Image (tube, rainbow over the protein chains, first blue to last red):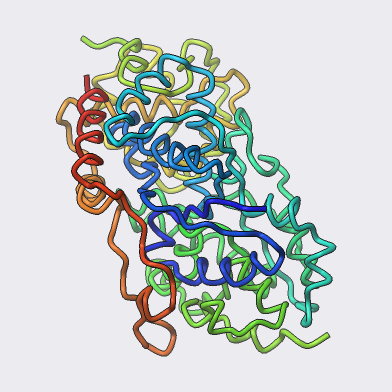
Length: 292
Length: 163
């Protein structure tokens, strides 16, 4: 279990809690994370401007992993979708592959298609497995009702390979249950965080994320579990701004990366998991995590 | 006059656009999160694309109201991929010099300068303490090893994408 760790832009430049908790937890299960020189943006944010630049930039990062003979582990849902989709395009369209490789040669790179792309929830569920996760715990999240937020780009479109089901995803729920928590299903599970709208219409994007946060709070959830830096940033860092846009001072929902909750249940140091960077009201949940 | 075929011509590496297969069932609009707050209706966009109203669509702000959740494409029973049609319209609007969100230009310029949409930030925790990657013992940020060649290749791609 050795992967090229692909952080993308958002994790590497500001969502340090995700990176810290992933680096702190995964290697303890024998998952080796390799930092690769030369990685750049996957290009997803540029798709609306110029779709070919997205294909190219993603192919560029795939090519870097190809050169090392390593499968990729992108932690961001957007990056994971880009890599899965572009890989599919390049593997099914020889002409596109040829023209992309023509440009990649400027940097001395070549896309060969050898490297696979894995999602964090696949690595946790398939490589490690819930049994090993359970066996690693010294604390329990028992009594906490948690909502799994998969993020659109982890589960759609089902026309290409995605890590979980588009209409009934369950892997993150299974992983959260393994920590002792009640991972309860909820009607808004598939709803979008709105992060992609921040550029053109921040107010609407905050309304979208606020709608989901409010629904979870009304349903009595103690917190939300995320696996994507864009979704997490919306629900966690932007929760204050969302309160203002909704005019709802009572909005209050703790938000954690799954790897942070895993680390907490393993009894690891909060500081090493970057818990201090969660800007949502996480204290209530932290107080309820008990020794087994 | 640009026709619907121009949509696929602007797109390198996007699945086939099958707007002609749409029977206007409306599943795309009913699953669209933006439609709850904004005027975007994927069903209407496909209907207009079927009628060659490409210029009207390019010039309209609705194509920039998409949250890119992919639910329209996922739930379409006729494999029409409304999201790819919106994306093609956005690319076309940009290539024609029509207005688009300025945040996109900022991200592109940042990618050209640093290889990422932004540089590593110093971030503040709940106690208002500041930290950067180094103070957190995180490895240095990764980026293209030869920015000159990286930009040369990217510029070539940007030129081709707008043909």
